[in-house]
Amino acid sequence: NLDAKLRVSTRAEIKHLQHELGVTTVYVTHDQIEAMTLAHRVAVMSQGEIRQLDTPEAIYDQPADLFVAGFIGSPPMNLVNGEHANGVFAAHGLRFPTGVARHTGPAVLGIRPEDVTVSDNGDVQGRVYAVELTGDAVLVTVIVGEARLIAKADRSWRAEIGSPVSLKLDTRRLHLFDAATTQRLQPESP
Image 1 (cartoon, one colour):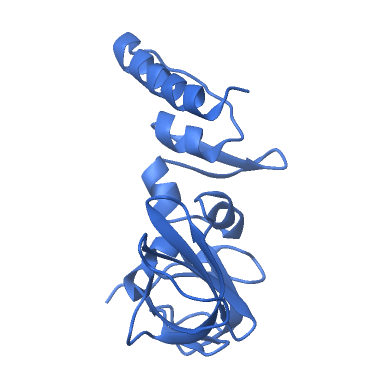
Image 2 (tube, helix red, strand yellow):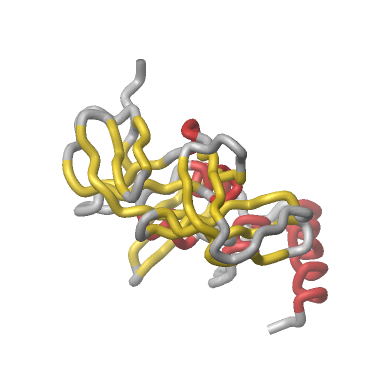
């Protein structure tokens, strides 16, 4: 339990020592930032079970299931419940092709906040629920139907709570999860 500034510098020291000594290190932490920054490989566990074992990049970019998707990332991945049929996810005014043809039924669409941007001509319309300046960016929580989406905006972006806003989603970075099994569904190759 170190203060924030000391924690960051200690993390850099540990990373440097790992490199200098060239030794295998098993590091156990509940802090996802520590896991992502220190590891060459990460085991994400829940209730004593490994949910995904992979590189930090793969875990972040291709989470195996809903637990990993919601656990890794700060803020966490946006997860929206809806229906999927004929390769299209639909819910709360969202309608996106997924590239997954073999799944029909309840599904969860996932997208990271940095892959959602405020735009004049976005894919989705909603209302500002909250605006949080984090220093280097602004986190904008937007209500779309009954869903909440968090977008990262430029640090100079401002809006009043309740004002209308348009969001653009990077459709190349969408994830689709089976609501029953919680597993990520892979798009079919063209």
